[in-house]
Length: 298
Image (cartoon, rainbow, N blue to C red; front, side, top):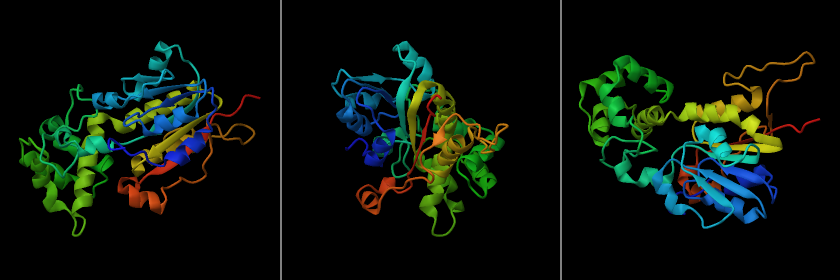
């Protein structure tokens, strides 16, 4: 699809282990690629899609089995309850930003276009990239550049941003920091800076954590949670929660030596896109797919 080509489509749908009459959730509806594949396999079941981006509404399929919830998926439990749903058979999350958001120059996600510093997945949100760049303290900028961008010298980049104020556009940001890019890693460095600011604007990691803590109670026994991550920060959160039931990855065991965790991993290692998929869709190259299941009640 032009809006967003679904990544690891067949692998993620297979891991959901769909029941034709089940109830499922697509946390990131976007272009609707994953949702349409789920609907193709449902017979009597229902699918709920979440998306906070108004641009995604145009992709809504005309299908009585589908309900689009225009909200951030951090509110998954509350929003599903409003639709009379307390248990689901599967949840699919394709994290990160969509191809549409990257390619829409005016949204300010891409360093390829000179656009207003925005980066909001939800345009009605008050915090934007412009606010972060122009109003955050040096300490605050250092923190997000190190934590979310994993930069080696965040203090230098932070100081450069402050000295270049006011920053109005994406190119203003590029000009302010590009001199600190390591040799032969210009694009990667700038992508890390943009990623850090984007994650801060949208609270992306916190949103994933909030969803993960709600998922076990939402899933029926035997229900599955399938997650596609695009960078190590996202993947680490998912991996730790699946393996240890928490976000620091420290496993706890009961008296009998059994791991205390609400979900059981289905994938021992993350599944990566095939070479053919990466050639067809280069934006899939960093994707990692993991799945977990809620144990059946004894």
